[in-house]
Image (cartoon, rainbow, N blue to C red; front, side, top):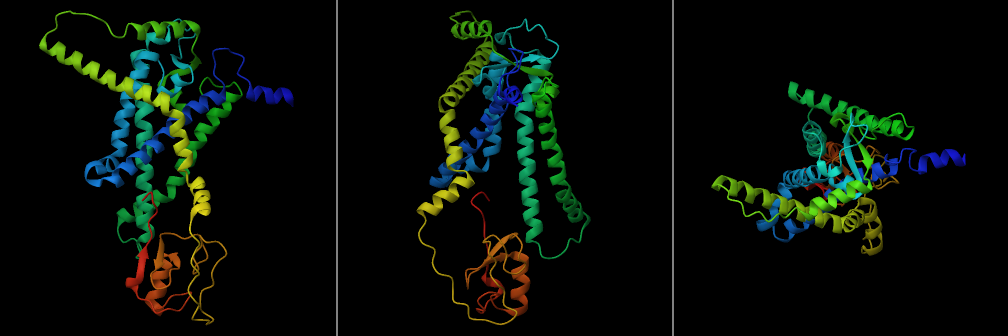
Length: 358
């Protein structure tokens, strides 16, 4: 058993091949950077909406541009993404078994552009799809009447199929990681396979070559350029300076960003709220003890009417209790009172609740 455990925790036999923990850690690094930057944009937008509101509205587009610039800089200079370089890894073409090319030489053009598109475009499109599904699901739950058009029936079918498609996508990654652990695959991620590359560790020659490349990165060449050449040179220097500043800043603050991601995670926020929140005021007095009055469930996330997890939470301003929108809408429309307290209630007293992320 100890030998089997050592197989999972130790680095693989090939010295240049990263362990599964290194591979997964570099994958999760960029996943921790985006939420931290998103929270920073949210704070700025709330502090001055007129000046910084666009950062929150166009955060996805701004982030994908910064990510594109950052990954292009690292792929061209280090043959690796930012997170891969941070963990001392590089990308090599699958056919390059001898690994004669150094990290400073860069990837072949085909693998370079494939890697760049898969690193930047796929997470962006996946995030946009998840937001679309969330908005469609909320619209579907908020709607009272059944769908009457073919378009509504289509997106309901899409909402029903999306969880299975997402499960297949995540399962693909899981199977690939299991094959990598067992030594049956060269890649821990299907994205690397699609890009035609694999990850290996940086060698001493790679590190020396990168140091030499960075040392001569600021040439003193007083050559004569045309006006177009000067403009192109200035643009390259500006983009390179921005990318270098981003990479340097992220390298220094990566642990701070991960701490922010943990601090503002939903699980941690529940603990913070329980320690710092004011005492909860007592609930309103129950005025109606009839047989048809709703009983409060034990779980706070359940609807008192259908006794299921609340969908599209809506509060009655007359009593303060929260229900599913459809449940409380139909009940108030029929009985004109709160299901729990019996307070006189009308449809205008229904208030939709929104989460902070909405």
